[in-house]
Amino acid sequence: MNDAVIGNFPGLAAIEPEARDLFSAKAQVANVPAGTVVFSSGSVCENYLLVIDGSVRVQMVSENGREIVLYRVNDGQTCILTTSCLMTNDVYAAEGVTETEINAVMIPATVFHKLMACSEVFRSFVFASYGTRIEDLLMLVDEVAFQRIDGRLARFLIERMGAQRQLQKTHQELAAELGSAREVISRQLKEFERRGWVKLSRGRVDISDPGALEALATNTNVV
Image (cartoon, rainbow, N blue to C red):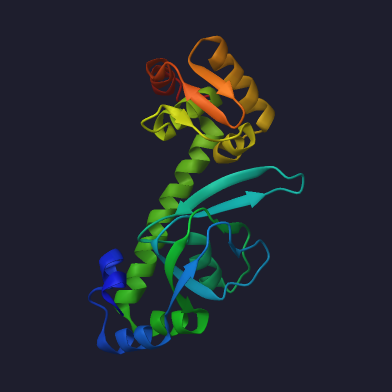
């Protein structure tokens, strides 16, 4: 186990010597290019992934092609679906795609189960990571089910607009991020544009009045 792993996953710093030796002998460091499908719906989980740096987008795609982004696995994080599949011996119910180049540590499934059996520190790390990501997923369910789409869209634009006050995303990509339909997002963006809050162009949203969007996001939390 090297310094990069310990630095990004301090919960493993005190791992027992036997487990550390097993981890060091069997874990592999992987460099994965952006745009790579690291797992797909229906596939078997073969590795436990620890992302050192980079971002993996985990999403579900319906039969009619509608997408929803469930969460992202970023620096120092693990994937809740991967953990679930390994613990239940089930297949993936969603897909994971690298948004950027990632550096990660991969632990083969057989080694994952051995570490779970022999290391209290590793077990605690896995369950703590799992619990944190479950909370993130429950927040998404709460947003999709109970919060108004205009407020959610306004908040997303404010949080992601960057220093240039613009967002490079299509209406379809925004719909996937927010668990909505493209038509709904397009209609709402056009309303924002009519009010002078944003300016729309192909694949881009420029924020003209962030204060108005912030006020909407703050005052429309419940359906």
